[in-house]
Image (tube, rainbow, N blue to C red):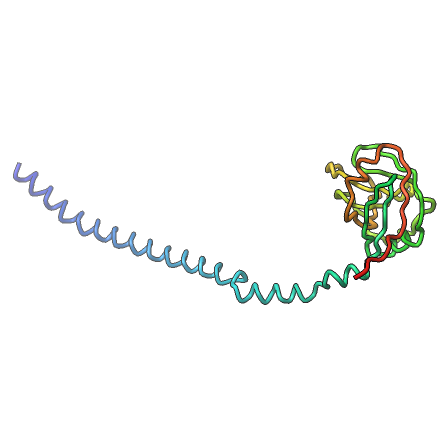
Length: 199
């Protein structure tokens, strides 16, 4: 029995320093990993999101955007008249939108075939040879569908994809979109230049 106790004591004497060494090694690894994590976190926090860099970036962005008054002064505003209700749209600054503006005033027979846009055939085709076409749309878009030379006033974006060749956006309804949406399935809509606003 004394021999058993002696061997157990010898094993404890060997294991104890080994355990201490393992604990010290683990502690060093933890400190090393913590240092790396802290360094990465510092790198992220000191990146572009710092107050100095964000303020300078926003300053450049703000200076490159025209003032609202400048945009409104040059924008072409049109009225979409349905009965005694009027919606106002702002035309895009594109060749096709300018061609559409040159066509005004016009009266178009509108219908609502899909429950998301009022559409009507324009009296003439627009030159859209170099126009940007889109397979998507948003509520308020004033767009042109070239296969039937139709104007579309989108009032509800249902998320459906537009088939080829896509829509050519002419502008966007600014106010009174609900007026167009509630105008019915068959009605006449007069499109004309809006009176210039007094500033």
